[in-house]
Length: 330
Image 1 (cartoon, rainbow, N blue to C red):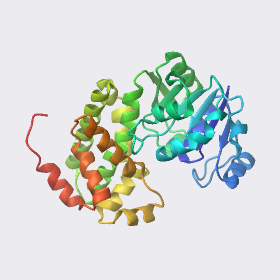
Image 2: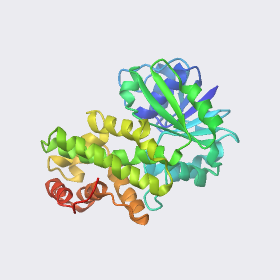
Image 3: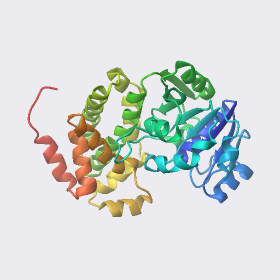
Image 4: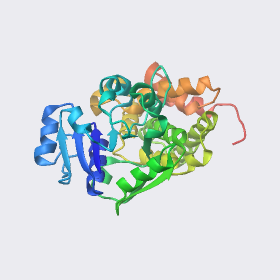
C-alpha cells in the first residue's frame, strides 16, 4: 500500500511513522525544502519530533504531486484554519479513488464546518471517501511506541476497515466507527476544554476543579454533538473522553500548556510568544461558540474560554461566572 502524509508537524510525522511501521510505503510532503530533505536523507524530523528515527519505508519531498502520485491513502495534517486555502491548491493531486484521511481537530472559522466537510466541499470528493482519525493522539508518545488506541471514523465501513488495518500495530490499536460528526466534535471541543483546564491548573486549583472541568466539558461536547446528529455514546469513548483526558492531563498537550500561560495572567500575545505557536483551541473556541449558538446549545465553558482569549476577561472572573450560573439538574 502507498500512502502520502501532507504536513510535517509532530502528529503528521508520528502518523507517517505508524503507517510505515505497519507496512505502507509513505511519502511525507513538507512545505520547507530543508525539512523534506532531512526526512528523505536522514529519516528524522528534529524540528517536530526530536530524537525520533523514521522507518526506511518513510521518505520526504517538497513536491506535492510526487507525494500523492498513486497513493491509496492521503493523510492531511495541517492547521485546521489553513485547510480550505491549501486544498484549493492541492485538490487536483488526489487520485480518483484515494482515501482521504483527516488528522485535523478543529471547526472552521466563519463557516463553522467540520474538517471533513471542508475536505468534501473544497477538494470535491465524496463524503464516504473521507476518514477521520481521532482519540488520545499525543504524537511524542506514539512515536516512542507507547501503547494507545484511536478511532477511525468513516461513513463507508469498508474504507474505515482499510485504514484500520493500515494502522494496526502492537502499540497502536485502531477502532472503527461510523460517527464522523461525533469523532470530529470530540477532537475539536477538547482543545477548548484543555485551555480551561490549563488555566485552572496555573491558578492553583485542585483535582475537584479539574475533574469538574473535564466532566462538564464533556457534557457540553455531547450536547452539541447530539444537536448535530452525533451518537452520544461516542463521547464516552476514545474520541470523546479519551482525547479530552489526554489533552487536559498531559504537560505536552499544547492547548493545556497555552491555557497555563493565560491562567498565570499573560495576554494572548504573551502566551503565543512563550509557546511559539497558537493553540488550536484559541481559534476554534470562536467557531465552536458560533456553532453552539446557531443550534441553541449552551456551552458555558467554551463561552468563558472565548471571553478570556478574545475579550481579555480575567480567568479568575471567568471561574466566578461559571460557578455563579443558575442552578439546574445535571
